Image (tube, rainbow, N blue to C red; front, side, top):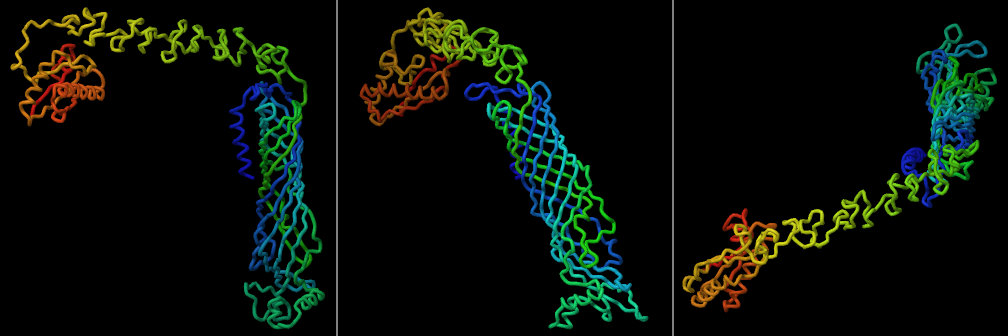
Length: 598
């Protein structure tokens, strides 16, 4: 039950957080402000009831008490059932919070019990003789019914979550008017006596914890020890008939009575509930409640649970303070009293008005449309600029499917990957960043091409179709010297490649032919081809490119008759550059393959 109570409290925050102004069918959820400030609540409550009771010490109530054990007072098997009626008034603009008061009645029940009761004390019999009274309690148990009247003063909270569902919580104080306990007892007692005789024939009080052996013991144990076959009940009944205050299993002469606790105690109650709206005038509430009330009582200083056989005073008469707690489930109704309201005077009643505090239009259920785009302001993300439904009222001026606030080129249709900007030449570089927007190019040259791959963009290259160094404006430098004789060819001469290419130039064929001839002459020789690149590109890519260049050289040697098993290839990537990579000339020398013969 307690877990359910705390679960309902936690649900209040969670449900309020997801509350909307419309339901899943886009129907208006009437705000709490559309209801009357006045309401009337009726609740039925039922659950468990318990009391923690504190007794007054009774040691002083029994003269010269010995071997005293007044037992432990317990309350068990408690239950509670009742009802309340309250008038509510909700305050504030949104009318979520309010105050309520009325009357509450609780009928409560349970069992009060006192265990292990035993007392021995000085008493005087009907003849004036002093003796020691011994009382043992058996099953001192009372069935208790309580009539509990209170005035609740509650702080109230309510919120509407949908057209049908809501949440409400009451929390406040209870002013107790009356707490009357009616009891039926099931107690029984053994009344025994011990007489000690003085020398003059009279009696005195034996105040020893263990009676003197010369005492007259009118006890059940003593009689059975001396008369194992005797009738102990007849023995005690005979003595009681002679005026002695003794008897076994003596029950109270009156088994019923009532005890009222002191009124005016202040307690508190918490009552969270779900609401199901039957209409705009009435809601069904169901949930849980927890109630606490302090107990106080004026206790008789001379209280004794029993004295003479047949006498009995309720154990509740000895309760001086305690705590009464009740928790369980409640079911109730809330009725709203008053006329429907239209705070913004737009002709739409507040209960049907999605925007009850702003003058609006009937076709938009009371919400305005400031920019006149046919989308009400409460659904329009761009309230002052006409837009379209797709973008919740925000515009898309170039109709490229990207709303203006996210479009880097809002007045020119473009692509989503370029935030709405176009790429006319399709080179992956948006036109706004492309120096050559109509010709496909490379990112490293801001979108301009480099047809001959010499690292100089075409718009700066005087020979755009032939590779050449930057020092000669992209044109090749003519070679004046005659080609070396075949016998002067060195196979270690680097074989150069164009940018990002693996094609062996014709100018390197003599070097390959010389290597093929030497391989034919030396049948045990092996050629190792080392491939290299410049530092353009990633290391992983350059590593693969250098291997491909070495393999291209091996392929040419195979075509010239060299057994490919005698040719090994190694790719070094951009490692071990021949020249600096900071100039086009240096990078051109680094794009190479070199043969070594072993």
